[in-house]
Image (cartoon, rainbow, N blue to C red; front, side, top):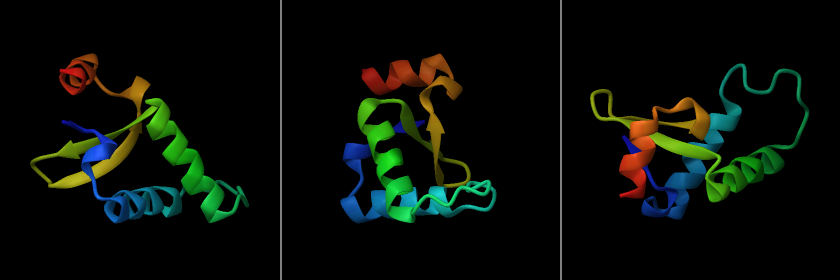
Length: 79
């Protein structure tokens, strides 16, 4: 299930993005400042290039590139 970023409180969205950009294996030697990485993810969400995926079974949210989610999920988001 996809969650529009606008449905999350600002603090919740920020924590989700921070978790994503600080996760093990996400920096790959990249020394880009944390604030810059957070802004990149925010822009991707704003542009619709990234989406928030919620798994009801595990009650977990994660970020994904739009191209990596099933097309039917994207249709549900636009309805």
